Length: 355
Image (cartoon, rainbow, N blue to C red; front, top):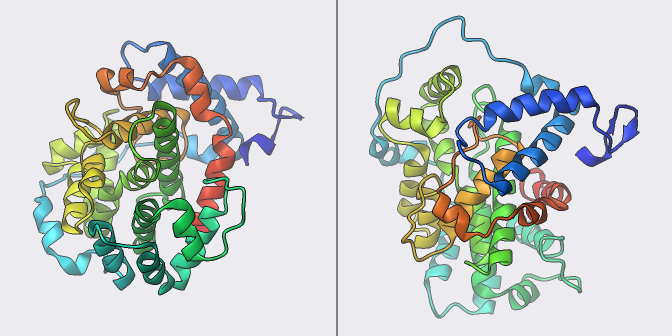
């Protein structure tokens, strides 16, 4: 983990020249934050420290990009064309479909849910690891799904099971277009931060917040599977023009990954709150009754500001200031968001992605 790396000859000490290089990276990444408040300034400071540590381990990720060959042309695309081509979409496993029905049913019992999950040994093992991890910090060891459902709750565990089972559907994304390990680190971090925000503010549901953050960029994965060359070209345009990725997507394709992701989850009959969180994660509606879209919107800003992983977006998105203010994000609260986050992220990443 980053905090165990030796910098400048001493543990936990960042070499001054590395920190200065990281600060330059952060200045460019915060380009679209025009009037940062004190919490945003604290985020940038913490981001510089995090990026400095990452630069010491993986300097190649921060090498300047070259666009000498010119920009490729990108033709517009209809998102419905992607969603109509079922052969391009991941096949939903039977356990996923049964979990969906369980979530939507008001009569689902703990035994019903345990029976559904137990049909899938991989999902069973994963959920038991998750329940026994720092994610829940339960005082006792949970060794059966029935016990997990009883302790965590039917709705909570079913939401977690449905959301995390999606990860296994995306195993063949071309690495030359997007670093999938960095993508999932960013996604898991967004989920963990959204969950922390949920608990600190008392808004929303922790499991729904986590799954919403985990899946917020799923539209990117669908686009990459269906149109890898076109998506790669969009990424080149965004970086060469120093423009926010989702704005370039809308300009060149006619829609952005948030729109496609929301459409996909609607097609898969996900609960409305998760659809809304994915659909609105760049532009949450202030009038939205559900808290999860706002939680994910702010969590993505924090995760990108810290430089944790990458979804392909280089810049920190400017948050909706009304939504940002509704979180009560003081500098101290930003510190609380980040405290021990690396350790929790490492454990969750090992459980979710490495398995």
